[in-house]
Image (tube, rainbow, N blue to C red; front, top):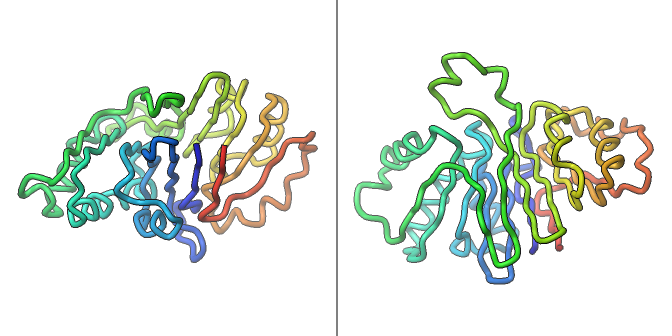
Length: 250
């Protein structure tokens, strides 16, 4: 599997970082897209991926920097006369909303040239070797019990990708680094958002759990200098900060 981080920015617009989007390419040629922030289609093409090879799209939550590139991606598939189906997995209570987005963008006025299969988030078999498992995060928990939580898409999710003994933890937005603790053991690679966590605590937790490699993403302009202040002993942990277009071979 090969991972490409196409968009490593956060909610605050940045001149050198795009909104959240990452693809996972498999030996079969199929591609999984996790989150589809603004401009993801252009970024995916820039980084050498074929938009029409994306077979599965998964969204972690419905904050705009994680999904607003998806309608344009669907439009690209329509214009390109795509014929193969796409599986789109959305957070709870967001299917009707996204159908409305497509309809109001004049994309459902006639039958699509391909089958767009929309379902709520669930565990997935991605290939003969790799599976994906969503896990709940506390990123939206400040709305728990509110009218918004009752009516809108809630809660948010991160993702675990597994193949035998191999385990990749892709945090997406979390409420704090504590959201990761139950999943850290056995993790080979942690791709962790940096906008809502204590960076030193993440490094320390990953080191203590035996994680081999940590890559920070979802970097806001305000956070850029914070990485220079990480003072915890990494204890051999390989950690770095992603840039757009980073390729991670496995």
